[in-house]
Length: 183
Image 1: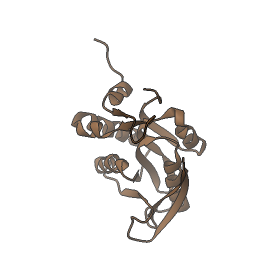
Image 2 (image 1 turned 180 degrees about the horizontal axis):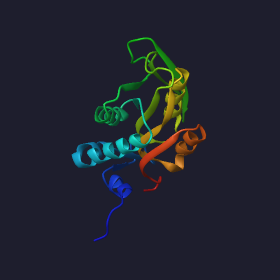
Image 3 (image 1 turned 30 degrees about the vertical axis):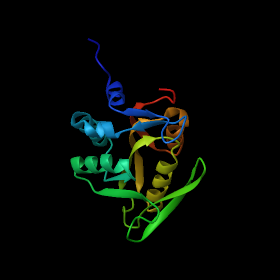
């Protein structure tokens, strides 16, 4: 029997919903991975192992599926957890950063006290697409003088170029698997 690589295992745990939310889109549904305790635990263990090699002070996660990953990782590591939310969703003083979408703009924000200068921050999300949200989140932490050591995601949609943009911005990128557009 052929052994399966970690990347292949994680890919096998993610459902592809074709034609959603519109024709021509292949939506990568990570809720199936979350539903499998073994796969979810393995994903968190892999990210935690990476954090042991590159020390982290704060785990930040992007609204909303990133919260499941980031919260579990922060708990596992015993680290503070910071929410990166869509604009207007946080109750205290915030800073925000806008970024481009395919049609228009969006913005994310964090609390003003999300990190201290030189805190090492890892930003977690479910997937890397164009990189806009993760770049905006990194800019916010850098504005607070945090040291964004990288980003972690279950999926890299390589053809959309986000991981390249993140690396060009000086960020380490760790994705557990990649999907091509036609897979």
